[in-house]
Length: 164
Image 1: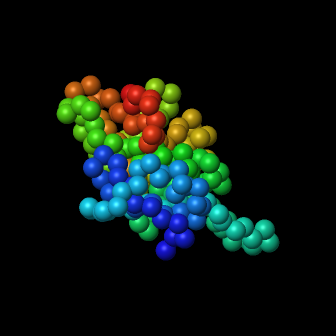
Image 2: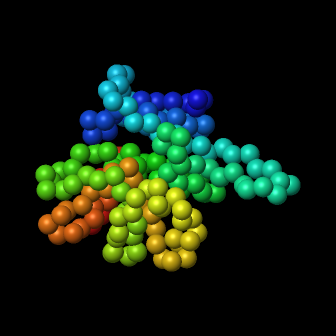
Image 3: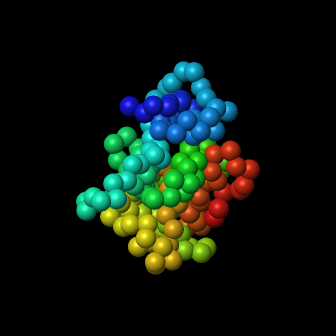
């Protein structure tokens, strides 16, 4: 289990967040709730010990949902950003015509495609970057079926408008 934990409420959802970094939990205090409904869980692993002499694969910092990695990186700051992006995706949609779907937006400039998270696991962040692509790690993507627009919610706590 995680050494630090908080239960937060976002968009009518109860979200359990665990981390090995107490500052993550402190940053989420404004969204703390005391009682849980159906809980969705995430973990942020930011303190990885490297073994420089090991010839095996290097452990990376990770943002996890249950037992699966949503994303892994050497850059812990990018994972904190990804956590806030994921939590922001739980905010309720303001437009009834928008659909919430369990796919990950992958963007290139102003264009986006939606990819199933399990398929995205097969491609490294480096491969995406080399192709000029960036995965917007969210739990829920939104799409407008009338216009074909993919909508990316801003990070939790942001006053920015959703990106279209």
